[in-house]
Length: 215
Image (cartoon, rainbow, N blue to C red; front, side):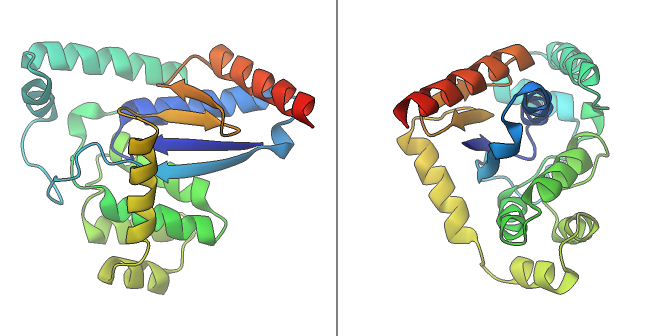
């Protein structure tokens, strides 16, 4: 059974959703027959390599709330992440363009380590305050995830996998995906947002039962 997940590496809800999916798969009876495919989605496709300024003030401007409200929301999200074993430092995030990160995640898919690359980029941005839009940061993080340094450099210096990123984004638009994470289970069952582990597990079991009935 295949699970497609549209998400962005600068999205705190996406990392939370990843952990909850992993928890659900840990309880799913057929987890060894599940393939997870990470799909590209840019929350801010026009972003520069790195945005300057305080993260809370940047979020406040984006959503039309006060900086204090943005900080409170970040604290609540940090607490939710902590419950899943994630150590967020959202006050240190260095927001920027994620297009090149998505291209390297596609390289990771070809090399059989897509999940490791995705995990490394999410942790670097959300937990370690790394500027994931900068090529030198991507180079180091991708290599630490297991990708070949020369291959990473070649991707960053060229346009490889750009078409694959755009194809993912086009499919998201066709499916009317407007927010991430978005999980598509067996091509039929959509899960919008970082739902609770129990909800994800229930959808996995339902999708498996439906697939078995079709066969």
